[in-house]
Image (cartoon, rainbow, N blue to C red; front, side, top):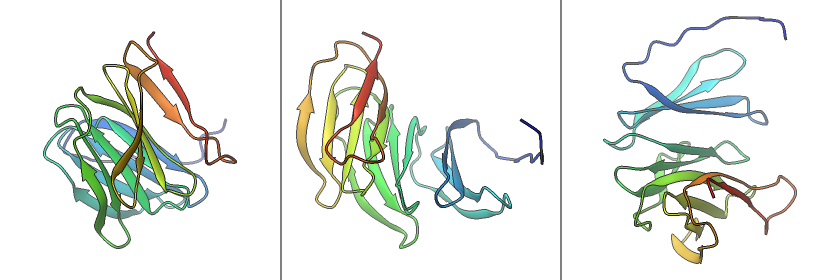
Length: 161
């Protein structure tokens, strides 16, 4: 790798998560005070910033089209999906009994999976906020969730178990 450009960001809170969407050339940074910022990955220009919650953002996922952002908060046990172009919630819910540790949006943004500290994984329909399934096969904290780019009915989970 060759360092092409170095950019320093001055943010008034600790960064908790960072995600990149190469298809739309954006990256998102979330912080412990509930704020997130969207940057252009080519110019490093700040495209959008918002404090979406007053608790630490622990999980973050960007939709394939770069418009929907999914956030999870351990402290609030809250999952929310924000459409930053229309500046509106797709949904906001508190469906886990434990802290939310991982999130992933499906490639078509119709589904969101969330994992928690108790090992449960929930599958949500993003346009209705309905929980479609709850998986209980893990017996320890869910550490990551991913949807493959070519399948809508498959996700992969990892856990401390």
